[in-house]
Each structure stands twice: as C-alpha cells, then as structure tokens.
Length: 191
Image (cartoon, rainbow, N blue to C red; front, side):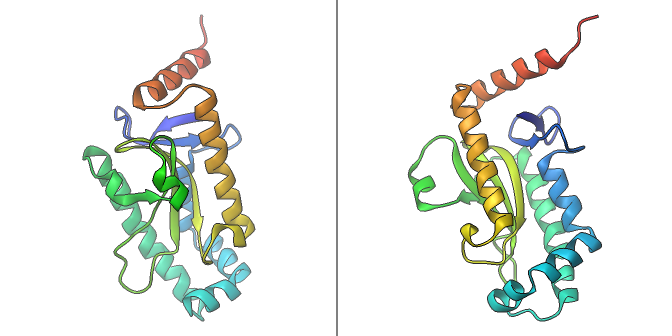
C-alpha cells in the first residue's frame, strides 16, 4: 500500500495510491465527481436509490447537485490542512469507531449543504487529531454502506488500510511518517 501527501510538505492529509491507478484516491474522487459521463452512468445505474431516498427524479438535477457539492467539498478539504480543523470535517463512521481512540474509520461530507443532505462521502483513517489518510469515497444514496456493492467496496478499503497500518506498527503521526519514509526510501533506486 502506498501513500501520498495531498499537499506536499504537510503531514495532515494523506491519500492511498494504488499501483494500478495513475493518481491517488482523493484526486480520483474529485475527477469522477466532475465528470459528466461518469455521473450520468452512475445515476442511471442507481436511479431507484436516487428516487426513493432523495426523491430526485431527474438525473440532470442529480449531476448538477453532485458537481456543485463536489466543488464545495474540495474547497473545504483542501483549505483545511493548514489549520487544526480537519476534525470538524471528518466524523466517525459508526458508533464503534466513535469509541476508538486510534486508527478510527471516518467520513467527511459537506455537512452544511442546503438543498438536500450531501450524498458525497470521503472515507479516511484518522491517525490522530487533524491527521487523516483518505482511502476513497463514493456517492452514497442509501441509509447504510452494506446495501450496495460500491459502498461495501469503500468499507472494505477502509478496513484494509486500517489493518495494514496496524500490522506496520502505526499508532500516531510519527509512526505513520516513519512508515512512509521507509517506503519512500525503498522505492528510490541507487545509481
């Protein structure tokens, strides 16, 4: 598992980057959420959930809402690493995560959205206050993550990342940065 700093030089916000993808999970989310064709396919495939849970009939409305919401969420998350306010954007994924103190599974969304609650989710592991690793995200149109395959996949990615961090002795920011530095030095070639 590889990690990248979302903003170079800052250790507050990280993202998982798979070897088979050209970019990290956070960048990939914002690309998808601003891609008309991706959103068109997604909402047509999930039209029943869109109608039953959010009472939105027109896919064009859902696409516009998603693009607007994604732009605001991107602004929120990329403005935060310079402050101590990431904890205000991310919240525990479940009650069991709420009771944990390290490596908790968290979700972020635009909590103050006006029209309807945001269906955009960014998922991350909280290392310590104001330090997060984004594992992915999705458009969540159902009450629970267990109801759809695409949200179950995001839950699995959260669990895999948390297990990987535990197996590699990560319990705080310093231990995570040590892991990152050791992975980075292994990837450098010696001439």
